[in-house]
Image 1 (tube, helix red, strand yellow):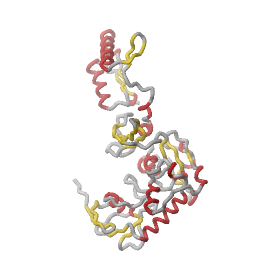
Image 2 (cartoon, rainbow, N blue to C red):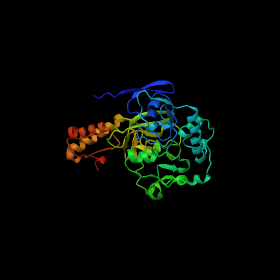
Image 3 (cartoon, rainbow, N blue to C red):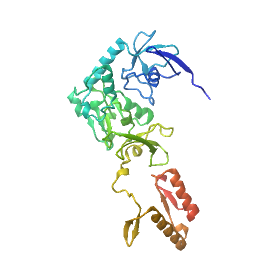
Image 4 (cartoon, rainbow, N blue to C red):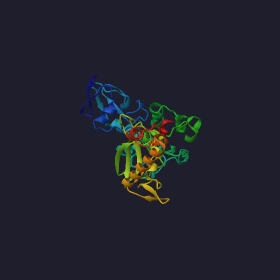
Length: 350
């Protein structure tokens, strides 16, 4: 067993112990010290693009991006000096001047990192500054919308698409004021190689990407297993008044926060009015509501009579990909041990 080496450094006069190899930013966040940032995520490689996590390091002449600077034993770091605050105000001011949209009407209101940073440095409002950016809306995808008028070019969506998902559907195109995040050739998302996994939506720090089916904030969150296949991805479902209002991948050892298009955007069936909530049994040609015991009794009676009349191989079992591995195992056990047939299949096999 390899034990991670510990190092100690001083941050704003506070002695902090952390693991060797961590960045100054991650070590600070782990210790509860907030350093503003827009392009950092623990699942992505250090980038240093937003220039908001600047710190002063004793012995280093210029301010340094803390997300790209590894912690060294004994280093002295200052994150809240007059010089750093002046640089932050200038950088955030430029971002705000390019940012289109009204915060109160934005889907990311109260969850927006730019809004949080603007408040942190004392900039009161984030409002529409360049009306021409309002038209940069791509709603071609059936699951999420891209509002490039709110994009801060942090590169998080591009990097997660390349580094984590391995798809590379989007890039930062053009240069300077003309820079935008878009698929190659400025195609729409629907025309690109996008797999609609939603990883870009989940990692976006502002309101430039939002899921169509998430319109209300959740009041609580519960964890469950994705019902679509046997991988066992863990979901964190935001609920409100007994309904699912948001979905994200939990950072479990199975899916590490990632989901496919089905798990991320395919749970609307849960609240479908066509779903059965009680068993139905056909009586005199009509389907009538029944208890579970009554329904199970009818199933056992019919399976037994068919088996006696035509043999066990006259019965076929078809299991559901929306069921758990354990439930499907029990069904195949019933088919083979109780009925005596190998006629069992599952749509996930194809």
